[in-house]
Structure formats: structure tokens, C-alpha cells
Image 1 (cartoon, rainbow over the protein chains, first blue to last red):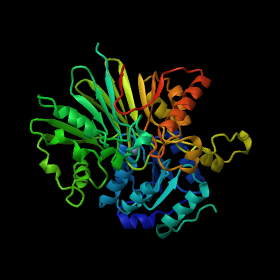
Image 2 (image 1 turned 30 degrees about the vertical axis):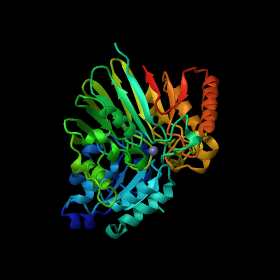
Image 3 (image 1 turned 120 degrees about the vertical axis):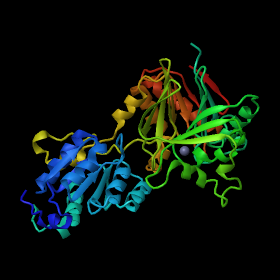
Image 4 (image 1 turned 45 degrees about the horizontal axis):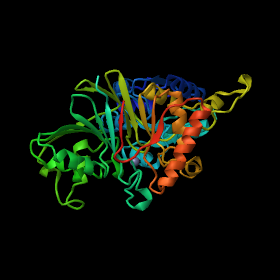
Length: 145
Length: 302
Ligand SMILES: [Zn+2]
């Protein structure tokens, strides 16, 4: 849990309040993902209302956002586009974690700037490895495994 | 109160299939007209079936108004629009509802298929008043009809619609497939379950939300493109085996089921076979509701 955010802070002129924000309308899924990443030493929060996610990201500056796709009010692809279009959040790494298993959706998400796409349910180690990979240039803390 | 009238103008999935093998059920792609008493008509999807509907509207001496809902933009749901002649007739008024894409708005999506490369007449040449209204998942009210839109499991933004009026409702889900069901059967002893196990076995398949969406509908029109054997070969093609459709109809306690979006390779006899099997499955569930295949030209009143 002892994550060094100095590098992130230097980049964004603002310190991350936590490493990972999970945007997921299913609260059980959100909670489970949070517990999982915390077990591997990342700090995390989740939000179930996607329409409020951009504001939360601007305010708390997570390094990685894990995004569901099919959500009411604001779907994950549109939110991904908003994050990547906004100057103050475009450096945020985005992992899509969705039940949608279509290649066309995956292509679209990557085209809009998402950094990775996992179809639910995925293996925990794949997700954790990807998070480490995305955080690596920004982090000098060490994690379990 | 007068009934809601549902007319099928196109019932085929993927591509039009004219010819003797599909004479009875029809070869035109998706288009369904829903008429609520006393208000302008609703048209759901603009596959090749909308052309015939257009001919009927053209015969009317009065200006026509209509609400056109597009579930998504695969060819079989929009290809009839350039041939919908009432949209070219001054005095008529149509409002087209559908999703924007994150980087392409609805107007552009529809006008692109009428780019000179693909079609000689531009959307600007439509003489009627044609408006576009982009929608997302949610609920809107149109002339007293409550229209709920919900994303389905199909590539891209694909809506199912629920139209409710006067205490009755019609659900239209032309393209949808079951979410992944793996791991759901696994019953592991609580003490041995790690957090990783729980994460990997959690299935957020949104089926509950789908059941809620269709619950109690007076009529459910749902994708039944495949037999289960075909579906096994076509997982991630975005369509359902009839078994799934029947099962959700039972779970949602709908009052009538229409099998829709027939596979282009299914001839009339094959559709008959699917209907028989679907009715048999309903009987096994002890749930005897009317279950019929969508048929071009057929009208249902509820
Ligand atoms: Zn289709």
C-alpha cells in the first residue's frame, strides 16, 4: 500500500490521491476489483455513476482508470474519449473491463485511446500484470509478486 | 382503448433473401411499424422492409409524420432508408432516433450511407422535414409513449427498445446474444476461495437487467437467428439461439413471443422447425404463451 506518487505528482502538477479508479455500474464487481488490486498493493477507489467519473478523475488524478463499457447515463467509450480529450486527464491510462467480447468494440476502444481491453471475466494475473506494465514508467514502488 | 398495432415489414437478419425458399416468412431485412392509437406512427429499424412501408405512406393524401428508431447501424437495419420515398416528399416529417458514435454523430452516420460514392441522392435532397435525435440508454416520452432504450450484447452501440402506452408494452430486441456464462456453475467451498477466484468467477452478465427490461411485456420481439448447434459455432456474432430467447421470455414473464431476425440461410421450413422447437421448450417450462415467427406483412394487435 506504500505507493510512491512523487513522479505522478511531478507530471500532473497535482498529487494522485490513489493509483486506480474503477468506473463500474455493478457495485459487486466494482468492490471485487478494488479488493483485488488492493491485494497487489495498489490504492484504489470505485465509482458506480459514470457521469460523475470525469470530475472525480480531474480531482483525484488516478494513474489508471478501469472502465466498464455498458453503463447508463454515460457509457465507457464516451467516457474514455472524454478522458483522452481533456488536457488535464489525457495522460491517464485506461483499461476497459467489459462483458462485451467483440473485436470491433475492442478496436474502437483502442482507437479512442484506451490502453488495454479485457473481457469479463478475466484472469486476475492478466489484469494485475497490465496495471503494473502501465504504471511502470510512473512508479518506483514495489508490489506483491 | 384501441389496440396497439404491430406490423412486420422486414423480418430477416443480415441481408435480404428474396426467392422461393423464403416466400412465406419474407426476405426483407428488419423493419417493424408500431401504431399507437391516435398518434403518429413509430417505425423501428430501416432495413429493406421500410421500402414497402414507404409505398403505403406515399399513397396517403395527407402529410405523414413518423418516429424512426434505429437499433444500430449495421446494413440490415439502415439499408432501406435511402429508398424510403416518403422522406423525399415535402410536407412529411420524420424524426430519426439512434445513437451517436463517440467520434461520429447520428446525422453523419446516416448521411454517410448516402455519400455519392454509395448512392446518387444525398440526404439533403430529402424533401420532407427530416430531423435527427441522438439517444443513449435511458427513457424518453414521445406523444405519451414511453420509450426505454437499453444497450444489448451486440457489437457497437445496439439498442433494444421498450415502447409503453396505455398500460401495454412492446419490446423490440432485434440483435442480441447471451453474455458469457463461463464459471457460473462453479461451486467452490467458501474456505478455499481466494480473492482471485472470486474475481475470476464473478459474472456481471447483465442478464438480470435484461429480464427486468422485458418483464411483463405484452409482446417481445427478439432475435432468434440460430439453433443451439449453430450458435456454438457463432459465439460473438451478436445473435441468439432460440433456446436463450425462449428462456428469457419465460424469466421475463412476457405475454407473447415473436421470433425475429431470421438467419439468411434459414428457409421457410427451417423457420417452421425453429418455431416448433421453441413452442416445445415453452411447454417444458410450463409457460404456454403464443409464440410465432415474424412474418413479412403480418399484423399483431395487443
Ligand atoms: Zn441485424
